[in-house]
Length: 463
Image (spheres, one colour):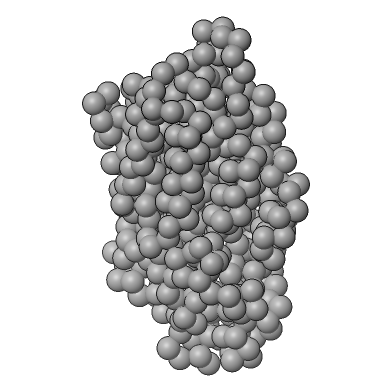
């Protein structure tokens, strides 16, 4: 999830924006629209598509409640929930195929913010500014979240449902067996690798460290794995001042070297395990709760698996699992790093019921429903009134830790070229982790691929 996903960091924390306004409002009706979404211009069958990933049922349960609420407020209308059972990258592909035709396009889709610009370029999404301008709840959304759903054309294409951050989860019981401190605070990459080596030596039968790598895990590999390393160096993926993509950077090579070390020393999963498309699900529902993994570089949302409504209820997790920030390479800069992403509710350009779709989005994002999903789905809230809600703030002991990481979080360069660049990152990681290429070869191939994607004139050298 991204693998889940998700201001996917507090994606943390850059999240998303909005969708379309009510038909009655757009027609100048004086009828007051209730907060739940209001009456549409007539009964409609609204299709909403989302990713069903792993055994979790949080989103399914949430959408079932929203469906009942919407249908009760709009007699004669129906909400058809379309789960797309797929890994993250396969979900993106299947959703894009659906959005290409008015015959298959859903009316509301769960859209990852990093795809917004590329999907706009492909003509898949509808701008929501007309609706947002008439929605009195838009002011409740944090500006950073709004920005994540705004495209390069200045228009907003999605309403964010939450954000996230990323850090290191570690099993205190395994650390105690290994003689490591249970209040672990690594300051450099070497500290992380050293802890993993100690676990390998002293706690047999346990995978010391997991970071996502390789093509099957898709964007989770690029964002939760590689970019959590790269942004801890002096280099980045994209130079915002020059508006160019960075190639030939030492930070890129150093990050690949970290990946190589993890897999060549056997302090991570085997390449076969890492290339399992279900690895993200297994980390949250098997490896961590069953005490088979020492350290996981993962997202703020992962504890959602362990709640009563999660895929693997685990009441003891609050005592067993610790969280600590991912350090920068040598402890420099801010000393720690996080990435944030986010998902939004968007309306496809070829939706047959955009006004009704907007009404449904408003129902999805009432304060009550937003608070419920942020709590049950282990999300960092993007609505101010939800963030201030006492029930939300006390829902998990991890909430404050991951929220505080927003101060150091980084966002992906979500330009139209990013998905292709991301794929090249994943290709380089897989080549190194499997031993098919040296670090220098993989970095060189990446540089050439990026130049081919964006044009050599749109690249610049790293530090």
